[in-house]
Length: 180
Image (cartoon, rainbow, N blue to C red; front, side, top):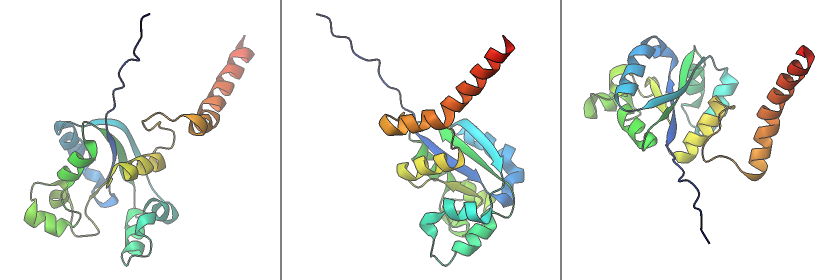
């Protein structure tokens, strides 16, 4: 009796990166740094969030003194969101960003992105997910149609299929039948 082993699963960690409104004009330059640092940009999206969307995205910061300023800043103009992938993407992206306070970054990590592009604690230029759970939540928030590994099973898989796959298939198959 021969036992067949399933093919090995290859998992590459992903994280969310945001180029904030005040430095969106530096997007090309920042993407070049990201790519040269070994990341793959899986998806990219330019959007303008409402204050309500910003509040929902930064829900963990709710109640803190800077929260109103943060949501006003993040909704002040377009921003660029990206899903970045590479081995240990979250920790490498955090390292590339440097400290969240750009003034501290300029002192302690002068080559970091926040030291280069940020101006203060609030306007630090870029965002990165804090940990795996935050990365998963933030990627789902900014890219709701993307499957975040590990691939969902059970009810989560059914929900995904019903929400995204079934309507697309139904539309395509209907158009195909009408064209015949």
